[in-house]
Structure formats: structure tokens, C-alpha cells
Image: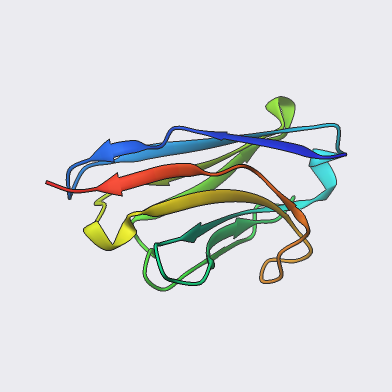
Length: 118
């Protein structure tokens, strides 16, 4: 069974940065698309960014130019660098083993809270 463990969330002021990490275990990390989703209170979970094994990426329009997804196969880890954070970025961020750059899979992490507030 795949296990995904996210970390790096916290409270940050608008305009500042955070980097999230997700470590995957017991899976063939190198052959899967990995992604980050987020869910704000009262809203549906939405795709933030995804990355293929070859490095092709897909970003939500709302984060393009500010967020960067990357992966390190040697560490079975996917990262989400978030710059210029906005209050609307407040959400629980989840890691996912995806079926494609746009379709989520069934394996989710427990989530990490990101709060953007002055």
C-alpha cells in the first residue's frame, strides 16, 4: 500500500514563501505522475500542480508563475515551492499519486495545513 507523508505547511504572511514536501513509500515512485491538490474550507478539492516522470508539469492558472513543482526520484519526494502566497491560498494541501497530469489517483496523503494571513 502506498503511503504519502506531507510536511512543510504552516502559518505565513501574504507575499512570503513555503516549500511543501511529500515522501512516498512502498511504490515505484519513478513511474508515476505526482501531484499536489488543495482544499479550502467549504470548497472542493482542486488540482494545484502535477509533474510527470519526465518533468512535464501542469499548473492551475491561479498559481502559474508563483508555484513550482519538482521531484527527486532518489528520495521518492515531490516538492511544491510556493512563492508570493496569497490569503486565498489558505487550505489543506494534499499529495497524490495521479493517473495523469490532470486525473487524480486513489492514494492521498494526510494533508498539511497552509494558512496565509497577516
